[in-house]
Amino acid sequence: MIYSLKGTLILKETNFIVVECSGIGYGCKTSYNTVKQLGAVGSEVKIYTHMTVRDDNIELFGFATLQELNCFRLLISVSGVGGKAGTSILSDITPENFAFLVATGDSKAFTKTKGIGTKTAQRIVLELKDKISTESFSGKNISLPADNTDVSVSAVSEAMEALIVLGYSQAEIAPFLRKCDTTASTQEIIREVLRLMNLKK
Image 1 (cartoon, rainbow, N blue to C red):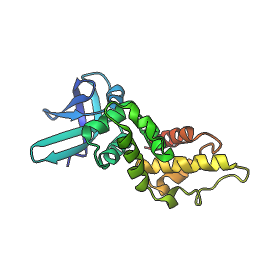
Image 2 (image 1 turned 60 degrees about the vertical axis):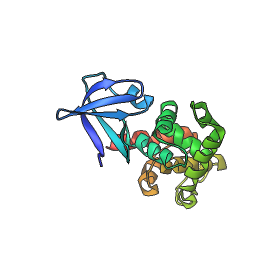
Image 3 (image 1 turned 90 degrees about the vertical axis):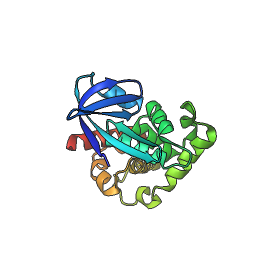
């Protein structure tokens, strides 16, 4: 399995890139969000990859962040969603918004991606929410100030659930979650936790 690639970006198209490593060019299908994050052709890049192997085809998918790779793997685990649909969805939706949409059950937002119908969108939300342990985001193990309202507790719980969708464990999330403004919106909390996590790396 190819976990990641680090090398020179030699081709950059809307949904396809080629990274040259030690003289070998690896072609990767990707999302437009990843393409926007990468530098110009000729720059050094690192991408995280997923390989699919079938009898008649081998495909390599590459993403700028582990969060986006995790979202892609979750998407293709849904029945009826393949690599092409997965990259299309992630071209329209960022990882943090993807997690938020799944956590809040907003299937309608997925239908804005070309080729994703109502039934597929509903299946994405249903199947991915089922992958999350309800106990993990219940909020029971999250320390909140005594004067927090039910709304803020709900926002923290939704943020926890959304981050678990991205592949993080509650133990990884909790220390950063405690540093956030728990009166903020769910999306703001998600963004802040991801920012703090990236600073820690």
